[in-house]
Length: 126
Image (tube, rainbow, N blue to C red; front, side):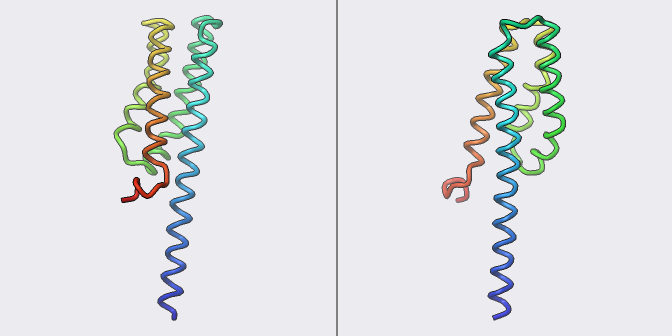
């Protein structure tokens, strides 16, 4: 009876860890996606300096969350997403708004793909 109880407790702990990590992942990805969408939406109305400030804020947000995301998700996609987000300030300075928009849209698509890959579904577990 003790073994069954111990196994049940371990199963509950494993489930809590999985759902907790998924919650953290979803929260961070949703925040980044929202900020990138906002940046694309307002890019035509802002000056280069204002865009640069927003892009640096997003890059800072990525730096804060990237360590946690890398410990939760072991994908090259996270590193590729990081490169895209961290390149935004340079894109604004050197390539202009159109290139920055393109990189933002690519990053948003990467986030959507990562979220889909990390959904808790039977297909993703097996």
